[in-house]
Amino acid sequence: MLTLDLLINGLIIGVFYALMAIGLSLIFGILKVVNFAHGEFYMVGAYAYTLSALALGISPWVSLPFALLVGLLLGLVVERLLMRPLYSGYTSWGVMRDEYAVIVTFALSIFLINIVDKVVGPYAYKGPALIGISRITIGPLAISGHRLIAAMVAVTVIIVVALIIRYSFWGRQIQAVSQNRLGASLAGIDTAKASAIVFSLAGGLAAVSGALLANIFNPTPDVGVFPAIKSYVIVVLGGMGSVPGSIIASLILGVFESFGGVYISYQYRDTFGLFILILFLLFRPQGLFGEKAREV
Image (cartoon, rainbow, N blue to C red; front, side):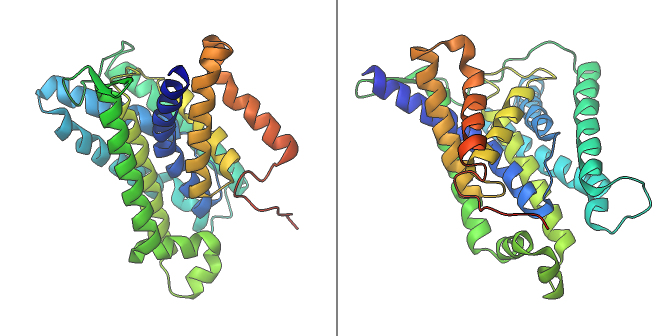
């Protein structure tokens, strides 16, 4: 009974991890950089969901797509203003491409945390639940109503995103740019637009993740720090740029944390992912679905 309960809860939290890590994986697949402000997209989504519901008195089911929209727009603005120089051929700034990405995204992270702290305040707000039922009983299991419904929403979003990337016109172009940016450009694909779509989509997914978890992890200016760290771990575990790898790694991490929190120590729950990461870096640095490569 306890084992089944831990397994279900681990898979549920893993779904939330996947929702956020997919966006980070897509960004790396397209731009080959890590977005150090990814956690702040999560934070903005949590605030957009919570404050719109509390201040305007609207239904959480309306606040949820609003949070998605805010994340999409923020991702688009950041890509246009800050990330576009990564692939626009800048040569005179005196910094290398990777250093530019690290500096800009890290600075953006600090800026967003501080601006939210000044505008909204440092105090936590409890996000509204999607449903009013506190517990849902399924056979011998009793699961939080909000957590179960939120997980179902997250799974739906992940499936929709996977189908879009796999079968849609822009999804196929995103795959082409991810495989070979220069080749895609020579084939007539608008690589800048593909990059903008990916960055916007990543922002939207992170924002939805923050909104769905706002009832569990109440939004504060620095609420995105730990989800971001877990996302970085997941992207490495799954294989840099691999969306299927990120999903499977998220579920593995969620289950490992669920069992480890009970059988080892809940106080060290957030360190389990780092322990797994160290093992992977030692024995399989390319991750679950990554490929060995050598830079020449």
